[in-house]
Structures are given as structure tokens and as C-alpha cells.
Image (cartoon, rainbow, N blue to C red; front, top):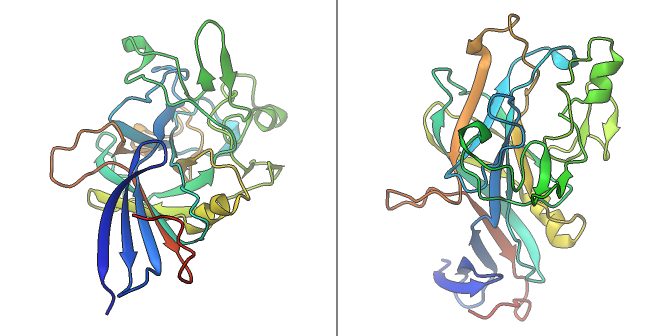
Length: 296
């Protein structure tokens, strides 16, 4: 029978990591429960401001309006971006799970059954200190739908991507010109609605389905964290979006076709004994005795 021994250590830029050693005598696995280094949600909606920052808000958001591809008008989508610092323990990652607590739906429309995917972000970004829309006195400093960094004084760095299925495609089919598809939405590998690959094409690392009841959602991100751990990709974090995120056109689709889910962010102050903030649970295979590089 395996025995479990828990240790709390201060490690890697002040993160509090919970270490679990597994085994009767020699540790075979070590599990770290990591808090995000930064998180934010980026909002594609003209009413609240596509440059608005929500990096210090106690919540995260994913939203989609149903539509029919590239040919419609204003999209009103929201995505969550989140990053964890992954310790390099000089051993293999055997399992990694992202957990977010789903606590509220958008309005009266139930998003249960919607699938949310994980994609790999390609560029660094600033979390920011905003909590509300620009029209309510919020800030544009930090990351937003438009920018990955905005330091003020005209020093902003836009995302290199366009709205997911993208301006050149929108205009090429003869239905564009409204100016809605624009820079923004995060940089990640994707295939546009004309079948053109960008940054290598679609990379969906994990999916999870919105449950019927509020509670924890989990994504198995083992493969992605293994690639980060191996140094294959730089770790700029993840973007979470609705798999069926599409354009919305007033008059064609009723308001009942908007779906959204709220999650607690790392800034959330829990009111229960259970910590409801996002976490990444990473298990390492320590291998043979002597491979473990961490001494509790």
C-alpha cells in the first residue's frame, strides 16, 4: 500500500506549491498544485470596449454568439487566457489537469453541453489591473482583445492574430467591409474558415463540456504540459474558448443563442473552506532513486 506524505514549500517566484510524495520508502511521484501566475478574460464587444482589461477581476469569462461562419457582422465573443509557471524538476510529467470553478451562466441561457477547448498561446502578455468595462471607468492597460501588452503613452503591442476566423477571409468572400474582424483575440495556432492554416494549423490540446450544475470543470492538459516541460514550446499560457464560437448577426439569431459561463479567477477571495480559484495539478514521475531534484 502506498503512503502519502504532504509538504508545503516556497518555490519558484514565491508560488506556494503543495508537494505530495508517493510510496512506502522511495518517492515515485510528486504532485504540485499550482496557482496561476496570471489570468484575464478578453472581450470582443464594442459596448464594453475591445481594449478593456479585466486582469484584476475576481472572475473569468467565456462567451459565444452562434452564427454561420465568416459572413456575418459584429462578433461578441469572450475568451479566458491563463498562465502557470511550470517548475523544471528534471523529470517527466505523467499527468496534468487544469481546474476552473464554473459558478454562473450568462443571463437566462444555459450553456450546459457547450464544449470549451484549450489552445496554446504563442506570445507573452500582461495581466493588467482592470476590473470593469472602459465605459464604466475601466482601464485599457494590460492585455485585452486588442492588445497583449498596453503600457500607456501610445506604447501598446497588439496580438498578431485576427478575430479567430479572420479579416482577410471575411473580406475575400465579398461580404465584408464592416471592419468588425480586426486584430485581436489572442495568438494561437488555428485553421481559418477557408481552410488556411496559421502557425501550423489547429492545435486543440484539451476539451471539457459545461456541466448541468455549477462546480469544477477539468481539462486534461497532460500532453501540452509535457511539451512545455520538454522545452518543445515556450510557455505563454493557454486560451480557453468555445469550440463553436462563431459570428453573431443582429436579426438572424435571437438573443437566446448567446452562451456564456463565468469562472472564478486567481483574484477571487473564497467565502468557503474550499479554495475555488483556478489551479493546475501536475504530477511528475521521479523515476529511480536519485532522480528527484527537490528536497522538501
